Image (cartoon, rainbow, N blue to C red; front, side):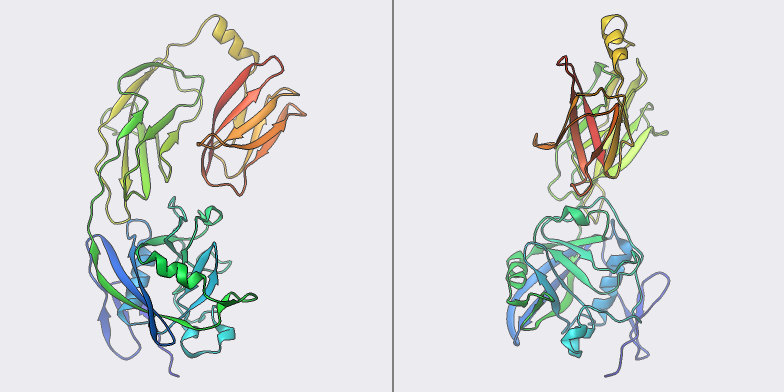
Length: 384
């Protein structure tokens, strides 16, 4: 069989299909929407509709869109089904090649550089398959059938299912070879572009700190909270001492509904903060700006007590392992998720210890250090 060679132009606007024909890719002004018609034994299994996220992973979206333009995916298979995890497909070997080669890919395919983001691998998310090289994604993709936090920050999220998730569930539960996770009967896909979702998300509603709050404690990390936006994927947080945000003190993206600042803000200082969301196709406007003022420097009893034990935690934010320094032997360390569930508990044996949260879902956790005298130190950990 003659191979189809795909060559992408610099701007990604056209695809060369190997037959001296230039095929323009689809145009869209928001999130491109595709339908994936699935068949088994030539009988319709169901239609899965997905929307892609050009605001989050533009290279992967353009790659997928370009491949659809030349009907690359048609008759390829969902060659891997893992209940409770993912379905995976899009390998050109699965058109007519031996099923033992399905999933191996074609080394001549163009590869797409990783576009890791704060978007989480939740049920229904579409993401790029790859090998150990983080920049090795090509045509293969997977759809999560359950939340998969271990994949966050390791694979490039670039879309999600918006209709037909029940057919994804049907596919993942197909009888399969337990050694290869390959369905016994081929499940083919036929992919076509059907439009663009141009919805612009609403700005988030801020919750805490309250607007014009004063005397905010500077000895602890400050938690900022806002309400979820129905189609929000990633939230962007800005903090500044300048009401016009011409200078930014703290700025980052998160998939959580909270942001936590570093410890020890300067006292008697006014701050301004705002949040906007990204739904994958458009950014919302920023929320109305809120402000707060940190407390005047403490004196007397509170200051003397704080000097008695100053807990240092680093790195924070961190990737999994947090060092608690200047802790006291016998102190009890407890870590909780934002729903109040205890996820870690240990008694300190030395003046420093490592709290290991590797493998847990990225986000904000709270800690408590309970001393022998029943004194309690608390704060936030950010697992990025």
